[in-house]
Length: 321
Image (cartoon, rainbow, N blue to C red; front, side, top):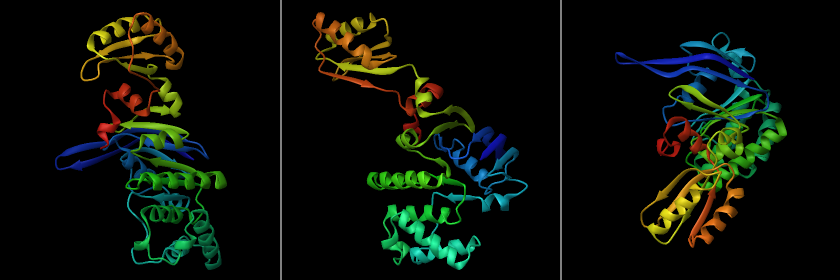
C-alpha cells in the first residue's frame, strides 16, 4: 500500500537548509495499522504530508495506493483519506450535510452520497447529531466526523495525523473503539502519527520510531520492547542502609543487570532482568533471609518510551510535553 525509498524533504529557512526528513524507507502492507512515533520536529508530520501529496519531496520516491506521489498526485488523493490535526468540517454546517457534501466533492452520486453518509453516521454513532451544527458537537463527536469525512469515498488507505490530540481520556478511548470497529468491518489500511505512547502500543500492529528525520526502529511494539534490556524490578526499603544491603543481594542474582541503589526520601533498589515475574520470588526469598524487608515492590515491563530512551538517550515523554 505504501513504498518509499530514500524519501527526503529539505526546507530553506533564511540562508540555512533544514533537513526535515533524511532518507526514509517505509513499507506498509494492505490492511496494516502503522504508527509513526517520535518527538516534536522528528519529521512525522512532514513525512505524512509528502505521502498525502500536500508536500512535494525534495528527493526519493514514494508510491502510495499504487500511484506515484510526484507523477500522479491527483490519483493518489482519490485513493486515500486524510484527517489532519485541525478540524475539517465547516463551523456553521450541519454535520450530516457537511458529510454528504464531502461525498459529492469526491464524485459520488447523490443517492450514493446519501447512503454513505447515513452508513458512516451510524457506524460512528453520530446519527443523533446529523442535524446539529458542527460547533455544537463535542470534541469526540467532531473528531469522529473528521474521520467520517476522510472515509466517505471508501479509500483503501487512511492517514490520521494525531487524531486524538486534545480529547479527554474517555473520548480518546471511544475514538479508538470506533477506529478498531471500522478496520474490522472494512479492512482499511491506516497510517497515523500520535504523541500518546499507549495508543501506539495498544492499537498499532507496527510502530516506526522516527528521530531527526530518519526511521531508527521498525517492528511490532512487543518486538521493539524486547530489544530493551529486560524488565525493570524496583523495591523500596525503610532506610538507606537496607537499600545498600538490598542492592548487594540483588547483584548476586544471576539474572540481574544494572543494579542501582536509590537514595532520597524512599531509598530503594532498581535492577534490570530478562523476566521480572520469574526473578521476583527468588529476590524476595534472598532479601527475607538477610533481614531486608521491602516496603514496596514493582515489576515494570519496558515501554515504547524505554525503547526511544535506549535508542537515543532521551525520553519521548519529555520531548512531547
